Length: 565
Image 1: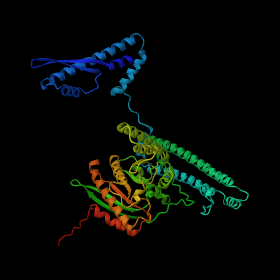
Image 2: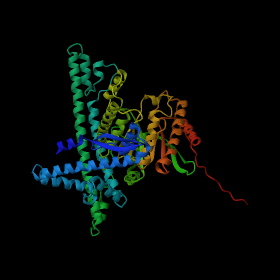
Image 3: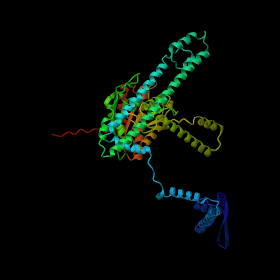
Image 4: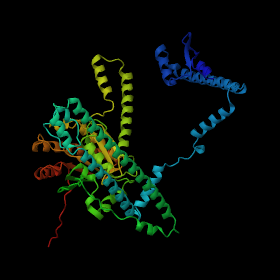
């Protein structure tokens, strides 16, 4: 049947049209290949132009052309149908298989007979959790989450202690180059090696010992990684099962043990801090502003300027004791809502968690089990696959569009192909979290070393990345977003006061323009934008930035009413 269908696709027929022009009888013959893929209106127009046909036959030609194509197409369909019926009668086609294929196609194309969409486990659990967190059981949920958090934190502390014992020798600047890249376990053992070096021990012996120490460290890290992964998986399963059971019990009005079950749930465990794992809290500098943006229909927004570490919005406050559940309550209640919170992290072009703020962020994420979304490593692996797929699609489209290129462009394309797993400055990827202190969404914005220079403009990739992030916030119900004002997380020597003022002015003005665009994106929803500056910035510099903000944004002023006597 497929071969017959292929023959029908290559069949040509002549369309013959006869007309008179003056005293002449003319005949137009056009070969057409069936089935006709071209738009009939376009084909008709081409025939008029190509053969210079008179205008008075246009309508008649179009009607006859439509009729001819329709009749011949129906004939082809009838011919194929007769061939298909003959194949069924002769036994070449299995009737049962044909019936199953028809039934499947009918169900997929007819809504009345299609199977209803089944909700996934994640959707069911999200609905259950949303109901419970807005019920009297919310305190119980937060207590249980905190106890799990303390349990994982203790495991991480134990891991850090063992790793510290393995590397108890401090790095020494005068070590030989062969020792620099390796962490050591026994200081006395390595001192002995240093003394015997050149006497009884060779370079090969030293390298072998260093390799053994490195292998021991890797084995220990792999052991703890596996144990932590297993513990979080067990916690997640236990938590989800308990939440589902509690919700089912609450629906049963005859179950008198529910109130006792909620009350008897474990109380908050205090986190035992050790080995320098206490997060220091510095004095918080903060200024808040209320502004109105828009030409005719003005929208009110809240702006905050803070001196804080970006990760302070992610870390759980371990030392707040009973206040922990109050600190987490708002974040938990808005997890499945239209008022999400996000922040922007400035990262390099590699999708990983091995260095810099990416490693610190991943460490904070791993300290508490995420009961709703995949872990940070799983999400990064998914992002990596999506990036590779997108790069491959763009590369194939570019090759089809431009064809062969000169050698310079070929070298450039080869360079891009070697780094397909990396993202470009201005691009960003998103991770979702339910286990962080004050945020639900993290935007990982790729920046390069150019952000540390003082000559970036409003068209810089980092600035355009912020615009795209704000657009995502508008389309995905993220009403609070935290942005690094200076486009850096740490201060350095080249970041002088003029540099900071110039950079802050640029970001303020650009964000103001992007926020005015929001009115066309979301219809003018009130939002909160938090501008963060590094915690190492001076108070004087902070207040200079605070004075600059109301000069750029239109800050709402208060009116004082006095009565006349």
